[in-house]
Image (cartoon, rainbow over all chains, first blue to last red; front, side):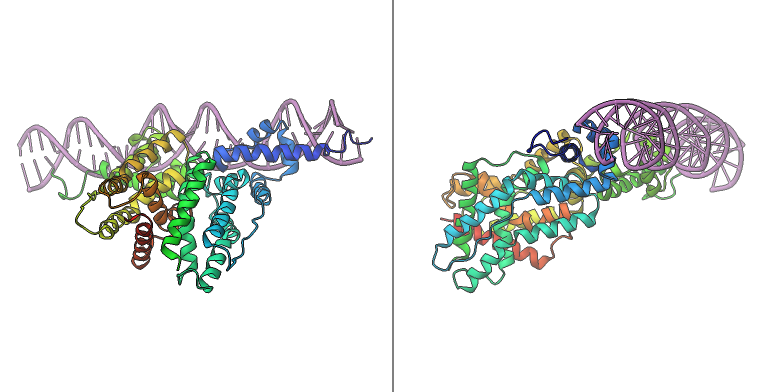
Length: 206
Length: 206
DNA sequence: TAATTACACTACACAGTGTAGTTTATCCTC
DNA sequence: GAGGATAAACTACACTGTGTAGTGTAATTA
Protein backbone atom coordinates (compact mmCIF):
# COMPACT_ATOMS: atom_id res chain seq x y z
CA UNK A 1 0.00 0.00 0.00
CA UNK A 2 1.24 3.48 -0.82
CA UNK A 3 1.88 6.19 1.74
CA UNK A 4 -1.09 8.36 2.63
CA UNK A 5 0.79 11.49 1.68
CA UNK A 6 4.24 12.24 0.39
CA UNK A 7 4.85 14.71 3.22
CA UNK A 8 3.84 12.40 6.06
CA UNK A 9 6.75 10.29 7.30
CA UNK A 10 6.34 6.67 8.12
CA UNK A 11 4.46 5.83 11.29
CA UNK A 12 7.57 4.68 13.06
CA UNK A 13 9.31 7.95 12.31
CA UNK A 14 6.37 9.94 13.54
CA UNK A 15 6.37 7.96 16.75
CA UNK A 16 10.07 8.40 17.13
CA UNK A 17 9.75 12.13 16.61
CA UNK A 18 6.96 12.38 19.14
CA UNK A 19 9.08 10.55 21.70
CA UNK A 20 12.04 12.84 21.19
CA UNK A 21 9.87 15.90 21.39
CA UNK A 22 8.17 14.71 24.56
CA UNK A 23 11.47 13.73 26.11
CA UNK A 24 12.96 17.15 25.44
CA UNK A 25 10.02 18.81 27.12
CA UNK A 26 10.15 16.55 30.13
CA UNK A 27 13.90 16.61 30.61
CA UNK A 28 13.90 20.35 30.20
CA UNK A 29 11.46 21.13 32.95
CA UNK A 30 12.13 18.24 35.28
CA UNK A 31 15.75 17.29 34.73
CA UNK A 32 17.16 13.87 34.08
CA UNK A 33 16.50 12.18 37.40
CA UNK A 34 12.96 13.34 37.91
CA UNK A 35 11.75 12.48 34.45
CA UNK A 36 10.31 8.99 34.08
CA UNK A 37 10.01 6.91 30.97
CA UNK A 38 6.32 6.39 31.70
CA UNK A 39 5.74 10.13 31.64
CA UNK A 40 7.63 10.50 28.39
CA UNK A 41 5.61 7.72 26.82
CA UNK A 42 2.35 9.22 28.02
CA UNK A 43 3.25 12.67 26.77
CA UNK A 44 4.30 11.31 23.41
CA UNK A 45 1.01 9.44 23.08
CA UNK A 46 2.91 6.22 22.72
CA UNK A 47 3.15 3.03 24.66
CA UNK A 48 6.06 2.63 26.98
CA UNK A 49 7.11 -0.42 25.06
CA UNK A 50 7.44 1.61 21.90
CA UNK A 51 9.78 3.98 23.65
CA UNK A 52 11.97 1.03 24.54
CA UNK A 53 11.72 -0.32 21.02
CA UNK A 54 13.27 2.90 19.77
CA UNK A 55 15.69 3.60 22.59
CA UNK A 56 17.28 0.82 24.60
CA UNK A 57 17.52 2.85 27.78
CA UNK A 58 16.81 6.18 29.40
CA UNK A 59 20.49 6.95 29.28
CA UNK A 60 20.64 6.42 25.53
CA UNK A 61 17.47 8.41 24.96
CA UNK A 62 19.01 11.27 26.89
CA UNK A 63 22.19 11.12 24.84
CA UNK A 64 20.22 11.03 21.60
CA UNK A 65 18.37 14.13 22.67
CA UNK A 66 21.59 15.95 23.34
CA UNK A 67 22.69 15.02 19.83
CA UNK A 68 19.34 16.01 18.38
CA UNK A 69 19.44 19.44 19.97
CA UNK A 70 23.04 19.89 19.02
CA UNK A 71 22.27 19.20 15.37
CA UNK A 72 19.31 21.54 15.50
CA UNK A 73 21.44 24.52 16.43
CA UNK A 74 21.87 26.77 13.45
CA UNK A 75 25.45 26.68 12.19
CA UNK A 76 27.23 29.86 13.07
CA UNK A 77 28.26 31.95 10.08
CA UNK A 78 31.58 33.37 11.12
CA UNK A 79 32.53 36.98 10.61
CA UNK A 80 36.02 37.57 9.27
CA UNK A 81 37.99 40.65 10.17
CA UNK A 82 37.92 43.42 7.58
CA UNK A 83 40.61 46.01 8.02
CA UNK A 84 38.64 48.59 6.06
CA UNK A 85 35.33 48.38 7.90
CA UNK A 86 34.63 50.15 11.21
CA UNK A 87 35.31 47.95 14.21
CA UNK A 88 32.02 48.87 15.80
CA UNK A 89 29.96 47.58 12.89
CA UNK A 90 31.85 44.34 12.72
CA UNK A 91 31.57 43.75 16.45
CA UNK A 92 27.86 44.49 16.39
CA UNK A 93 27.51 41.97 13.62
CA UNK A 94 29.37 39.40 15.70
CA UNK A 95 27.16 40.04 18.70
CA UNK A 96 24.02 39.90 16.58
CA UNK A 97 25.20 36.48 15.53
CA UNK A 98 25.68 35.53 19.15
CA UNK A 99 22.20 36.71 20.00
CA UNK A 100 20.81 34.61 17.22
CA UNK A 101 22.30 31.60 18.98
CA UNK A 102 21.10 32.71 22.39
CA UNK A 103 17.58 33.19 21.06
CA UNK A 104 17.62 29.77 19.49
CA UNK A 105 15.15 27.60 21.37
CA UNK A 106 17.16 24.50 20.61
CA UNK A 107 20.32 26.04 21.98
CA UNK A 108 18.69 27.19 25.19
CA UNK A 109 17.00 23.83 25.67
CA UNK A 110 20.28 22.08 25.14
CA UNK A 111 22.12 24.27 27.57
CA UNK A 112 19.39 23.94 30.17
CA UNK A 113 19.15 20.21 29.83
CA UNK A 114 22.90 19.83 29.88
CA UNK A 115 23.73 22.32 32.60
CA UNK A 116 20.88 23.43 34.78
CA UNK A 117 18.71 20.33 34.72
CA UNK A 118 21.39 17.98 35.80
CA UNK A 119 25.09 18.25 35.37
CA UNK A 120 24.48 14.61 35.78
CA UNK A 121 27.57 12.88 34.36
CA UNK A 122 30.40 15.44 34.56
CA UNK A 123 32.21 13.76 31.70
CA UNK A 124 29.41 14.52 29.28
CA UNK A 125 28.93 18.03 30.64
CA UNK A 126 32.56 18.84 30.01
CA UNK A 127 32.38 17.37 26.52
CA UNK A 128 29.32 19.49 25.84
CA UNK A 129 30.96 22.66 27.06
CA UNK A 130 34.07 21.94 25.04
CA UNK A 131 31.99 21.63 21.90
CA UNK A 132 30.08 24.78 22.72
CA UNK A 133 33.27 26.73 23.21
CA UNK A 134 34.52 25.41 19.91
CA UNK A 135 31.48 26.81 18.20
CA UNK A 136 31.84 30.09 19.97
CA UNK A 137 35.43 30.91 19.31
CA UNK A 138 34.68 33.06 16.26
CA UNK A 139 34.84 36.10 18.48
CA UNK A 140 38.30 35.26 19.71
CA UNK A 141 39.57 34.75 16.19
CA UNK A 142 38.20 38.12 15.13
CA UNK A 143 39.77 39.91 18.08
CA UNK A 144 43.10 38.25 17.44
CA UNK A 145 43.00 39.40 13.81
CA UNK A 146 42.07 42.93 14.81
CA UNK A 147 44.90 43.02 17.32
CA UNK A 148 47.37 41.71 14.74
CA UNK A 149 46.21 44.45 12.38
CA UNK A 150 47.01 47.03 15.04
CA UNK A 151 43.42 48.12 15.52
CA UNK A 152 42.96 46.69 19.03
CA UNK A 153 45.48 46.88 21.83
CA UNK A 154 45.42 43.63 23.74
CA UNK A 155 47.93 40.87 24.37
CA UNK A 156 45.27 38.41 25.40
CA UNK A 157 42.52 38.05 22.80
CA UNK A 158 40.94 35.11 24.61
CA UNK A 159 40.63 37.11 27.80
CA UNK A 160 39.20 40.06 25.90
CA UNK A 161 36.63 37.89 24.17
CA UNK A 162 35.58 36.43 27.50
CA UNK A 163 35.06 39.93 28.77
CA UNK A 164 32.86 40.85 25.85
CA UNK A 165 30.97 37.64 26.30
CA UNK A 166 30.49 38.33 29.98
CA UNK A 167 28.95 41.65 29.05
CA UNK A 168 26.36 39.77 27.00
CA UNK A 169 25.77 36.56 28.85
CA UNK A 170 25.10 38.22 32.16
CA UNK A 171 21.95 39.56 30.52
CA UNK A 172 21.03 37.09 27.84
CA UNK A 173 22.28 33.66 28.85
CA UNK A 174 22.69 32.88 32.51
CA UNK A 175 19.35 34.26 33.68
CA UNK A 176 17.64 32.25 30.96
CA UNK A 177 19.51 29.06 31.79
CA UNK A 178 19.46 29.10 35.54
CA UNK A 179 16.21 30.93 36.17
CA UNK A 180 14.28 30.04 33.05
CA UNK A 181 13.83 33.71 32.30
CA UNK A 182 12.35 34.77 28.99
CA UNK A 183 14.78 35.84 26.27
CA UNK A 184 15.49 39.54 25.90
CA UNK A 185 13.23 41.61 23.68
CA UNK A 186 14.74 43.24 20.61
CA UNK A 187 15.14 46.67 22.17
CA UNK A 188 16.99 45.36 25.19
CA UNK A 189 19.17 43.20 22.99
CA UNK A 190 20.13 46.28 21.03
CA UNK A 191 20.94 48.22 24.17
CA UNK A 192 22.99 45.37 25.63
CA UNK A 193 24.92 44.82 22.43
CA UNK A 194 25.68 48.46 21.66
CA UNK A 195 26.61 49.28 25.20
CA UNK A 196 28.90 46.27 25.36
CA UNK A 197 30.63 47.11 22.10
CA UNK A 198 31.08 50.75 23.01
CA UNK A 199 32.51 49.89 26.38
CA UNK A 200 34.77 47.30 24.84
CA UNK A 201 36.08 49.70 22.23
CA UNK A 202 36.48 52.53 24.72
CA UNK A 203 39.00 50.34 26.44
CA UNK A 204 40.62 48.32 23.67
CA UNK A 205 40.43 50.43 20.48
CA UNK A 206 43.62 52.11 19.34
CA UNK B 1 29.14 14.13 85.86
CA UNK B 2 30.53 17.23 84.16
CA UNK B 3 31.23 17.46 80.48
CA UNK B 4 34.49 15.89 79.33
CA UNK B 5 35.72 19.15 77.94
CA UNK B 6 34.30 22.65 77.68
CA UNK B 7 35.05 22.76 73.95
CA UNK B 8 33.31 19.50 73.04
CA UNK B 9 29.61 20.03 72.30
CA UNK B 10 27.02 17.58 73.43
CA UNK B 11 26.83 14.30 71.55
CA UNK B 12 23.59 15.20 69.91
CA UNK B 13 25.02 18.45 68.59
CA UNK B 14 28.06 16.68 67.21
CA UNK B 15 25.83 14.19 65.45
CA UNK B 16 23.67 16.94 64.09
CA UNK B 17 26.72 18.78 62.80
CA UNK B 18 28.06 15.65 61.15
CA UNK B 19 24.75 15.10 59.40
CA UNK B 20 24.62 18.63 58.06
CA UNK B 21 28.20 18.45 56.88
CA UNK B 22 27.66 15.13 55.15
CA UNK B 23 24.44 16.33 53.59
CA UNK B 24 26.11 19.41 52.17
CA UNK B 25 28.81 17.28 50.59
CA UNK B 26 26.34 14.84 49.12
CA UNK B 27 23.85 17.38 47.84
CA UNK B 28 26.66 19.41 46.38
CA UNK B 29 28.13 16.71 44.23
CA UNK B 30 25.02 14.67 43.50
CA UNK B 31 22.12 17.09 43.63
CA UNK B 32 18.89 16.74 45.53
CA UNK B 33 17.30 13.84 43.66
CA UNK B 34 20.32 11.59 43.45
CA UNK B 35 21.31 11.94 47.08
CA UNK B 36 19.80 9.36 49.41
CA UNK B 37 19.25 9.59 53.11
CA UNK B 38 21.06 6.29 53.56
CA UNK B 39 24.16 7.73 51.94
CA UNK B 40 24.01 10.84 54.09
CA UNK B 41 23.69 8.75 57.22
CA UNK B 42 26.59 6.53 56.21
CA UNK B 43 28.81 9.48 55.39
CA UNK B 44 27.96 11.18 58.66
CA UNK B 45 28.81 8.01 60.59
CA UNK B 46 25.34 7.99 62.05
CA UNK B 47 22.39 5.67 61.89
CA UNK B 48 19.65 6.49 59.46
CA UNK B 49 17.22 6.69 62.33
CA UNK B 50 19.27 9.44 63.93
CA UNK B 51 19.05 11.46 60.76
CA UNK B 52 15.28 11.19 60.96
CA UNK B 53 15.33 12.03 64.65
CA UNK B 54 16.96 15.33 63.79
CA UNK B 55 15.21 16.08 60.53
CA UNK B 56 11.69 14.91 59.82
CA UNK B 57 12.23 14.58 56.07
CA UNK B 58 14.71 14.93 53.25
CA UNK B 59 12.92 18.06 52.17
CA UNK B 60 13.36 19.68 55.57
CA UNK B 61 16.98 18.62 55.79
CA UNK B 62 17.60 20.25 52.43
CA UNK B 63 15.91 23.46 53.52
CA UNK B 64 17.91 23.53 56.74
CA UNK B 65 21.09 23.19 54.78
CA UNK B 66 20.17 26.11 52.60
CA UNK B 67 19.64 28.13 55.77
CA UNK B 68 22.87 26.86 57.26
CA UNK B 69 24.92 27.86 54.25
CA UNK B 70 23.16 31.17 54.01
CA UNK B 71 24.02 32.00 57.60
CA UNK B 72 27.62 30.94 57.03
CA UNK B 73 28.16 33.51 54.33
CA UNK B 74 30.21 36.39 55.62
CA UNK B 75 28.12 39.54 55.91
CA UNK B 76 29.02 41.97 53.18
CA UNK B 77 30.58 45.19 54.41
CA UNK B 78 29.20 47.80 52.07
CA UNK B 79 31.31 50.52 50.52
CA UNK B 80 29.79 53.99 50.54
CA UNK B 81 30.53 56.50 47.82
CA UNK B 82 33.20 59.07 48.70
CA UNK B 83 33.22 62.08 46.44
CA UNK B 84 36.82 62.87 47.29
CA UNK B 85 38.39 59.47 46.62
CA UNK B 86 39.36 58.24 43.14
CA UNK B 87 36.61 56.20 41.51
CA UNK B 88 39.04 53.50 40.50
CA UNK B 89 40.13 52.79 44.06
CA UNK B 90 36.59 52.64 45.32
CA UNK B 91 35.49 50.32 42.54
CA UNK B 92 38.44 48.04 43.10
CA UNK B 93 37.50 47.87 46.74
CA UNK B 94 33.94 46.95 45.80
CA UNK B 95 35.13 44.23 43.49
CA UNK B 96 37.57 42.91 46.09
CA UNK B 97 34.57 42.58 48.34
CA UNK B 98 32.72 40.72 45.63
CA UNK B 99 35.62 38.37 45.16
CA UNK B 100 35.66 37.68 48.84
CA UNK B 101 32.10 36.44 48.48
CA UNK B 102 32.88 34.45 45.36
CA UNK B 103 35.80 32.76 47.06
CA UNK B 104 33.68 31.87 50.04
CA UNK B 105 33.26 28.13 50.09
CA UNK B 106 29.89 28.42 51.76
CA UNK B 107 28.64 30.81 49.13
CA UNK B 108 29.76 28.64 46.26
CA UNK B 109 28.30 25.55 47.88
CA UNK B 110 25.05 27.32 48.40
CA UNK B 111 24.86 28.57 44.87
CA UNK B 112 25.78 25.18 43.47
CA UNK B 113 23.31 23.33 45.64
CA UNK B 114 20.57 25.84 44.89
CA UNK B 115 21.20 26.37 41.21
CA UNK B 116 23.34 23.79 39.50
CA UNK B 117 22.55 20.74 41.56
CA UNK B 118 18.84 20.99 41.23
CA UNK B 119 16.73 24.02 40.64
CA UNK B 120 14.36 21.58 42.17
CA UNK B 121 11.44 23.66 43.48
CA UNK B 122 11.42 26.86 41.41
CA UNK B 123 9.73 28.76 44.20
CA UNK B 124 12.67 28.26 46.53
CA UNK B 125 15.19 28.95 43.78
CA UNK B 126 13.58 32.28 43.06
CA UNK B 127 13.48 33.14 46.74
CA UNK B 128 17.16 32.28 47.01
CA UNK B 129 18.09 34.42 44.05
CA UNK B 130 16.05 37.30 45.36
CA UNK B 131 17.93 37.17 48.64
CA UNK B 132 21.25 36.92 46.86
CA UNK B 133 20.47 39.95 44.75
CA UNK B 134 19.51 41.82 47.88
CA UNK B 135 22.90 41.13 49.33
CA UNK B 136 24.61 42.12 46.13
CA UNK B 137 23.01 45.44 45.45
CA UNK B 138 25.75 47.44 47.16
CA UNK B 139 27.35 47.95 43.77
CA UNK B 140 24.19 49.45 42.31
CA UNK B 141 23.83 51.81 45.24
CA UNK B 142 27.39 53.01 44.82
CA UNK B 143 26.99 53.58 41.09
CA UNK B 144 23.77 55.48 41.65
CA UNK B 145 25.50 57.72 44.17
CA UNK B 146 28.44 58.32 41.84
CA UNK B 147 26.08 59.18 39.00
CA UNK B 148 24.14 61.56 41.25
CA UNK B 149 27.41 63.23 42.18
CA UNK B 150 28.13 63.79 38.49
CA UNK B 151 31.15 61.50 38.42
CA UNK B 152 29.60 58.77 36.26
CA UNK B 153 27.45 59.32 33.22
CA UNK B 154 24.68 56.76 33.20
CA UNK B 155 20.91 56.92 33.43
CA UNK B 156 20.62 53.28 34.37
CA UNK B 157 22.76 52.37 37.37
CA UNK B 158 21.22 48.92 37.64
CA UNK B 159 22.13 48.14 34.06
CA UNK B 160 25.63 49.46 34.56
CA UNK B 161 26.14 47.38 37.69
CA UNK B 162 24.98 44.29 35.84
CA UNK B 163 27.55 45.02 33.19
CA UNK B 164 30.33 45.29 35.72
CA UNK B 165 29.13 42.12 37.35
CA UNK B 166 29.07 40.34 34.03
CA UNK B 167 32.69 41.28 33.57
CA UNK B 168 33.50 39.49 36.81
CA UNK B 169 31.11 36.59 36.95
CA UNK B 170 31.97 35.31 33.51
CA UNK B 171 35.37 34.48 34.99
CA UNK B 172 34.80 33.91 38.66
CA UNK B 173 31.28 32.65 39.19
CA UNK B 174 29.57 30.80 36.38
CA UNK B 175 32.46 28.48 35.53
CA UNK B 176 32.76 27.57 39.20
CA UNK B 177 29.04 26.98 39.61
CA UNK B 178 28.20 25.13 36.44
CA UNK B 179 31.49 23.36 35.80
CA UNK B 180 32.82 23.05 39.33
CA UNK B 181 35.95 24.86 38.27
CA UNK B 182 38.46 25.93 40.90
CA UNK B 183 38.31 29.55 42.08
CA UNK B 184 40.62 32.05 40.42
CA UNK B 185 44.12 32.50 41.80
CA UNK B 186 45.03 35.88 43.24
CA UNK B 187 46.91 37.08 40.16
CA UNK B 188 44.03 36.31 37.84
CA UNK B 189 41.58 37.92 40.21
CA UNK B 190 43.66 41.08 40.13
CA UNK B 191 43.79 41.07 36.36
CA UNK B 192 40.05 40.46 36.03
CA UNK B 193 39.16 43.16 38.56
CA UNK B 194 41.49 45.84 37.25
CA UNK B 195 40.63 45.21 33.65
CA UNK B 196 36.93 45.32 34.45
CA UNK B 197 37.19 48.56 36.38
CA UNK B 198 39.32 50.23 33.73
CA UNK B 199 36.97 49.20 30.96
CA UNK B 200 34.00 50.32 32.99
CA UNK B 201 35.51 53.72 33.72
CA UNK B 202 36.72 54.20 30.16
CA UNK B 203 33.07 54.10 29.19
CA UNK B 204 31.22 55.64 32.12
CA UNK B 205 33.62 58.08 33.82
CA UNK B 206 33.03 61.77 33.22
C1' DT C 1 5.09 -7.92 7.51
C1' DA C 2 6.70 -4.73 10.69
C1' DA C 3 5.58 -1.73 14.18
C1' DT C 4 2.58 -0.63 18.01
C1' DT C 5 -0.05 -1.68 22.10
C1' DA C 6 -1.88 -3.28 26.65
C1' DC C 7 -0.57 -5.42 30.41
C1' DA C 8 1.51 -8.09 33.61
C1' DC C 9 5.71 -8.67 35.83
C1' DT C 10 10.70 -8.39 37.90
C1' DA C 11 14.03 -6.10 40.40
C1' DC C 12 15.58 -2.45 42.82
C1' DA C 13 16.31 1.88 45.18
C1' DC C 14 14.68 4.80 48.30
C1' DA C 15 11.74 7.67 51.84
C1' DG C 16 10.11 6.95 56.03
C1' DT C 17 8.58 4.19 60.45
C1' DG C 18 8.47 1.10 64.60
C1' DT C 19 10.92 -1.27 68.06
C1' DA C 20 13.93 -3.20 71.22
C1' DG C 21 18.31 -2.74 72.98
C1' DT C 22 22.69 0.00 73.88
C1' DT C 23 25.37 4.11 74.78
C1' DT C 24 26.07 8.68 76.82
C1' DA C 25 25.26 12.33 79.85
C1' DT C 26 23.16 14.10 84.03
C1' DC C 27 21.89 13.96 88.67
C1' DC C 28 21.47 12.31 93.19
C1' DT C 29 23.29 10.02 97.15
C1' DC C 30 26.76 8.50 100.04
C1' DG D 1 34.70 12.70 94.46
C1' DA D 2 32.88 7.63 93.56
C1' DG D 3 28.92 5.05 92.16
C1' DG D 4 24.70 3.88 90.79
C1' DA D 5 19.93 5.31 89.14
C1' DT D 6 17.65 7.82 85.30
C1' DA D 7 16.56 9.92 81.17
C1' DA D 8 17.82 11.18 76.59
C1' DA D 9 19.92 10.12 72.48
C1' DC D 10 21.77 6.73 69.40
C1' DT D 11 21.84 2.22 66.86
C1' DA D 12 20.67 -2.03 64.37
C1' DC D 13 17.32 -3.92 61.88
C1' DA D 14 13.31 -5.26 59.99
C1' DC D 15 9.59 -3.59 57.46
C1' DT D 16 5.98 -0.80 54.44
C1' DG D 17 4.93 1.51 50.44
C1' DT D 18 5.93 3.62 46.31
C1' DG D 19 8.05 4.96 42.06
C1' DT D 20 10.49 3.51 38.33
C1' DA D 21 13.75 1.16 34.79
C1' DG D 22 13.33 -2.36 31.94
C1' DT D 23 11.31 -6.99 29.89
C1' DG D 24 8.22 -10.58 27.83
C1' DT D 25 4.20 -11.69 25.34
C1' DA D 26 0.16 -12.13 22.87
C1' DA D 27 -3.05 -9.38 20.42
C1' DT D 28 -3.83 -5.39 17.31
C1' DT D 29 -3.08 -2.12 13.64
C1' DA D 30 -0.82 0.29 9.63
